[in-house]
Image (cartoon, rainbow, N blue to C red; front, top):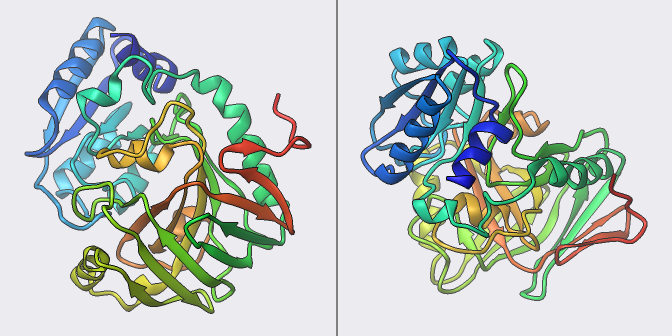
Length: 323
């Protein structure tokens, strides 16, 4: 009950009389739907449960009737088993003023005491905004990890993207439990290798049993290696868009109560992880409008901006002040 209240009050600020849409599909955890619906009704708000098909590709478009419902609601919570928060329907709903929480594939366990939703989102917001400002002020980035990740590229002129979980203002979009800061690298600028040893989100059941190595040249994915590589290659083939080789995002997880597990949004949020994404970069400050956005998570990441370490396996550099 405490974590449900945290989501409905601190993250979304559900008010009396508001219509709140719960977006579900056949694999949504019914316990999560029941708990959120009860919490919405306890706040004298109106819960509207909308069920959509089970999508395979992240970013798929819901039916037009559901899109209209989202745009007319005061708030919405995405509980579908695959992420669709990058869809045009969601973007139009945000422009219409709908407060939106993307929480795809969360389970009842995600709401556990001491878990990733049992945090002070307002307090974490300070850290996220400090990191986002650091991204925005940098010209270059580098991410390394003990598993062998080492990529570098340009972020010059790209704003920092802050996901802190709080969507209390009209049109706000957040994704609790995901707490992260990142940006879209300048197209064509990144070279190196990323060793994905946590998960390929929404591409099979995670975490990964063995790593997948991704090689980038000129901001494009040129090689995928590892026993689990088929998870990613199959999804890229399914999307069937040549722009999916674009390096769309680089971000770091900042949720201290997260863990690498079978829930994609918790894995992505976990303090000490980083993730890169392929394909669509529009929402992240980039210019590539590919058909999907595919996130790939690595553990124990160190982030360098303009050559200096700013986040070392989840620990902020001493000269980055929070508050």
